[in-house]
Amino acid sequence: MRVIESWRKDREERLKAPNSWLALVGLFPLKEGANTFGSASDNDLVFPAKAAAKLGTLTLSGNTVRMALERGVKVNIGATIAEDEIIIFQDNNAETIRNESFTWTVIQRADQYFLRLWDAKNEAIQQFTGIDYFPIRKEWRLAATFVEKQRTLAINNVLDMSFNQVSEGILRFQLKGKTCELITLDGGPDSFFLIFSDETTGEETYGGGRYLYVDRPDEEGKTWIDFNKAYNPPCVYTPFATCPLPPKENHLMVAIQAGEKDDMTH
Image (cartoon, rainbow, N blue to C red):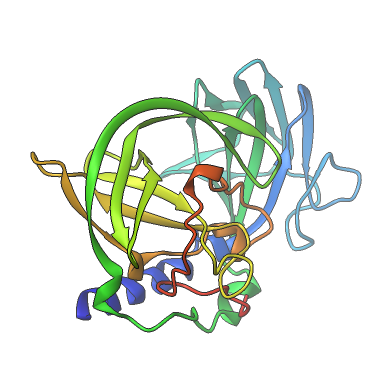
């Protein structure tokens, strides 16, 4: 139980960080060509009111985004202060830009490019009072067997976009007398990433499903699924996320009363 409690504490602290989901204040689609940005209402990308009225122009050309700043505007890129035109996104490599309490970067989803904007002083961080959880129970930590079954599947997100993801296989496990399976996604060199829904989805838990990381299996194909670590997608905390949704194959016909509940505190 201490491991889960520590994990929960770390997660809540991360949610209050200056670059967290609670700090997000904007997600702006970029059109091909010039996109002016700043707080003035005549900008293409209108930032919150406390930002400078005219910050600059982002120019999208193919898979490259250039940023030209207005005269007198300075930004930080790492430890470097920039005030000239620079490339901030190219071939999926993005720079992170800071100005006052704001941070922004360019992200790509399918064939669409967006400017993602954070505010380290966003009120949502101060208003956050914690996450509502189901009780921690050891019976929700389940032995699972990995079955290699590589496939490409289309994953939809909350923006009604679809993108292909490669799955290496499934995790098979027993739950309440039923044999259940979940399709795995790549979670890095040591983990699988699971996006699932269950009979609590849309009731006790968020309607867009929940997420979970699982250790990759050992040489015998064995691992553990700990639903006590099932957590809410970023969309629970901000309207500016691009959360992937569970594939229909990952709906469990049981109530997973473990992990995070639908959080109404944001």
